[in-house]
Length: 245
Image 1 (spheres, rainbow, N blue to C red):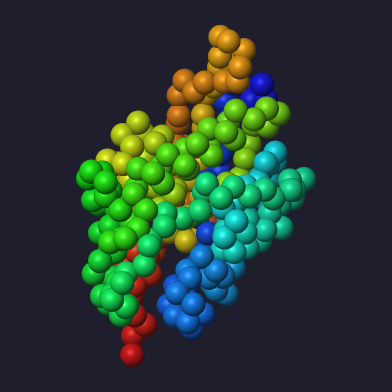
Image 2 (image 1 turned 90 degrees about the horizontal axis):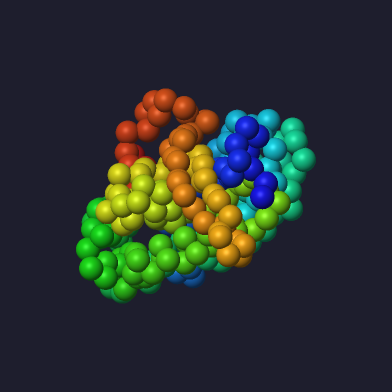
């Protein structure tokens, strides 16, 4: 089994969130489909900054959810590397938690009032992402399944995974062992980098590996603003904030 240098069974995942997007763009308002939203110019610059911070890292694997915003982020980050660039792969199990729409709630301020604290109630029984959205527990199951399949794949020790705020929170909660009860504490700013190490040992049956420890090495690192100066809103508050008149 491939492992990080100096270890016997440790693999590292650089888990990124996509860069800045505008969920209230004309395209989204006309189609109602947030899955198609692309990076803004700011989001592209954020993705490039993340890639520059990772320029010395040699990645064996690179995976994104397949939504345009994660694909763009991954490609822009990979373009900044000074090392060999792996082929970008896609795993739909890492797409964002499905919101399910808001019915009659259409105005930006109304959506904000519904969504701003949505992660705080994720651990409640059958809690959903929005009034008609996906159950948080179901989203965690599919995201963890995707990461477990990655971990059970041979011949790699360092991977880049570009996903979404909600999915990243779920995976970080999984790493803590506290699941959905932990996710409200993990802020995920645009194009942030999280670093997760996973210790693995071969199964006694010889069929794959099993996890013995998950280690969170870094959370929500934003190379375009390392010390978060001026970033005083949560990521959800920033999404719904209106530009000053």
